[in-house]
Image 1: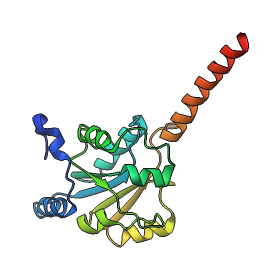
Image 2 (image 1 turned 60 degrees about the vertical axis):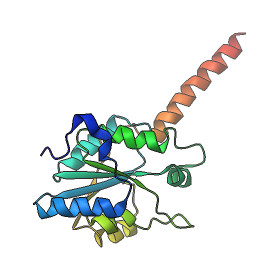
Image 3 (image 1 turned 60 degrees about the horizontal axis):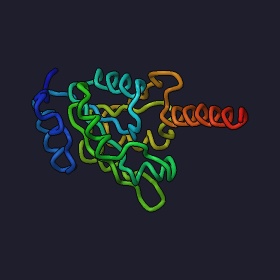
Length: 183
């Protein structure tokens, strides 16, 4: 279903305010559209991400994607992440044709526990998660705010951003070490 397809204004898909986003999704739901939400870091967007997002969209009509803020990613993945800054990640996501709306997610408490702000506001018909991304207890919490929770397998082998970074660094370090040893 082609809901938000103004190719001249793709970045209008980015909605910062959760109240505004909730208003838009509630209006779409009243028109009969099924709202799907997923959340991730989306750092170094790769084929696994794009396949996952397309699969997520197949479970409804409107795909809302939450992107972890730089602060959140540093908490979850360490001080050297993200590779791609938040604004650029949001914009890249907005260019994906399967995504209808994008928002930043920055609602972890002082000990890093997610507060579910986006899904509490939007109350999705379907929340999509990737396997191993949420502990079982957290999936149970998510079910309180979503009509349905679907856990998908990873959509491409060996394409996690962390693995891509590690493999790239390893290849470069090996080449540097080989060059040093040749001297």
